Image (tube, rainbow, N blue to C red; front, side):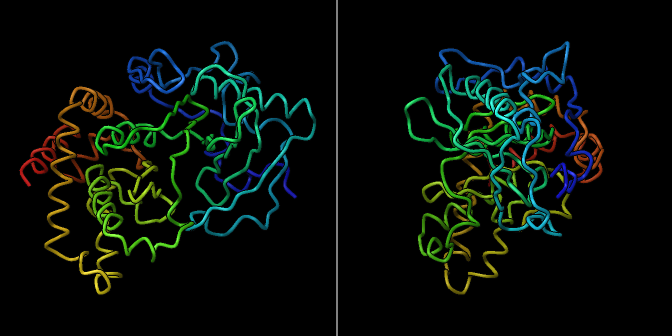
Length: 345
């Protein structure tokens, strides 16, 4: 059995801290958000202690795992990490002291997200066969039943940027989150991952099919291709909510084909997946996306301006990607063109 379960993953996942450009950190320091449990707005970026980034009290992914954590048996790891389903493996620390230290860090994070209280940690589980092996933490306030879980993930700059843009453009109530260079912490979206549901039953509902078409437009607006995977979609009521944004702006070659997939697979069963109904729903959602963004134009485009010189997953700046792959002067121009097209569609 390996000493470190993360040895199954690439080196960049096992690093404690990643580089996040200071311009991104400064943006999220100055743009505050109000979450339930807090009287005042709070910044999403939570700095690590300046004097000692290895401090056991710092809110980091490694500290939430804690020292001497149970290793995941090798048989849990598949050759292909990004499978449709995600396996869980509950883990503990070797000593009570190590366990208490990890739970203390998680308590710091929960208080930051949801307001001061005493929280008890019911369980910590590795989410296996994912790209960054998040930790799923089930918690409860004192004397309460366990709440929905919170996820501690390795940070990813594109995911942080994408969530901000999606929260503005999607129209869904944003769930609480925060980050620093060593962790991305996100409250769970109230709903169920699509890969854990019987979609055949859901597809019989007109409002679910309608939600799929709308989610398709949210992904198109952010140039996000990875939503085809069922594991990247949450069913909330009968809406489809997206939640993973690290693969944005890969270029027209990687266009989202979610709707085309459903039209090919289900078009014979559900005529509603074919025009003109789909065309009408797309037009409606595009108008709504344009309205949401224009309403918060300052918030949206201030981050776009920051992103221009930030490097994306390919190693190019977002501005270079916009020029090379989308034939526009900048990312700002790309979205201005999108807004015009969506408003006039």
